[in-house]
Length: 142
Image (cartoon, rainbow, N blue to C red; front, side, top):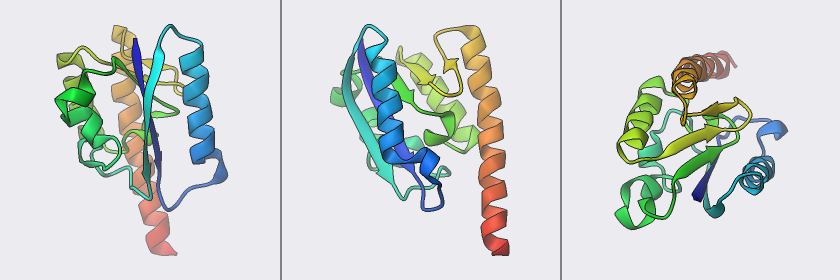
């Protein structure tokens, strides 16, 4: 099983979401499952409001047929590292199901291999979007 890791860091973050920490968690998950970590994408200084399909790092691994064929499972530390937009998350889930891919968010205990995993992904997407809007409001207030 080919594993694709996804790392994202926005401008406004703390050390608990560091790139190194995200890589570490992805490697830990990959080591514990029967598969090969094919690649880990990095999107640095990228807002969670940017669609995964439009990101410089992750986007090509979702849109280029050559790259798409190399992996079966997309792994991220948390769902908000993939997206903080509910609509984009649902679009990714729909795409993943249509293309025989799984999405795993390690810290959120989400794995779309199961029906409950798909449900929790959708629920977590709503909370991730709410958090993005809350962060944006705080930044605007200064």
